[in-house]
Image 1 (cartoon, rainbow, N blue to C red):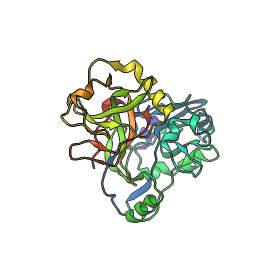
Image 2 (image 1 turned 120 degrees about the vertical axis):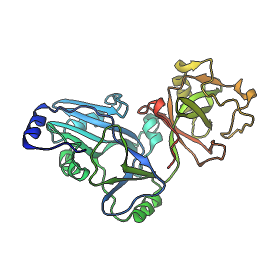
Image 3 (image 1 turned 180 degrees about the vertical axis):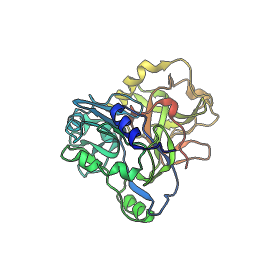
Image 4 (image 1 turned 180 degrees about the horizontal axis):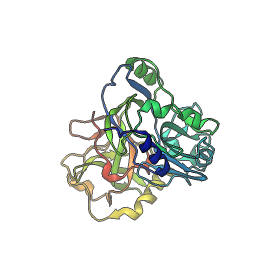
Length: 333
């Protein structure tokens, strides 16, 4: 229920409110977009979800699991200091744009290998402004002052995609972009909620998976073993061998060394059958694997789920710093 907004309550809120981190609101996955004038469409961006929290001269950039991103993206921190507000909490996405202006999650992961790619912040919601908590206001009211707050800062505004749901999907698909988010114009902001008032349509299959082990190749990796949580159990999803270059194989290998463990974290391994390209892991193959604590999360693109619940043609895109392993579930519309 939306809180009452009487004069006395509003004045009291303005006096007490301070800009703080909240767990971002999330969208439900669907296989078809809703349509109608009550829906707002925008691009689903391929990057790190983040909140900018500004309180006077102090600026923070926090990931969706409340990790500090300010040192990773100093240019965005500098831009955030120039927004036209003394206090603000801005919800958005950190992304890397390639030379054609297209989002690239791999470039965001490996910026040193892609020096021409430009890291930017796209803002799509305003949760707090100069002492006032805006989260109980409808989306269209929260969006109204956002462009003015961002003006001249270098931070970018996520624009509305105008047209019917079918027209929007056709245009985004033609550009080869990841997907579309639809939000009810009157939706309030509920921190941490995956609400039906916000939905997302993915035009290519990709999601986060938990890394539970790898097949080593010297001081590098040959394949990652990934899965997702079903309740408290980590279910095996497949082997991932594509999407790596020699440098990333070594980098991922190094990041996984502190997580090594003697025990396989997947209760559904070994499997009777095995496939070189992402199927099961046989009892014989288990001997080749190095197991890790299920703490690291990777972004994986794939062609489809097989009938056995395995990933087909899986490709590594990068490690995720903004997602807790325990929150990773299989994403089905």
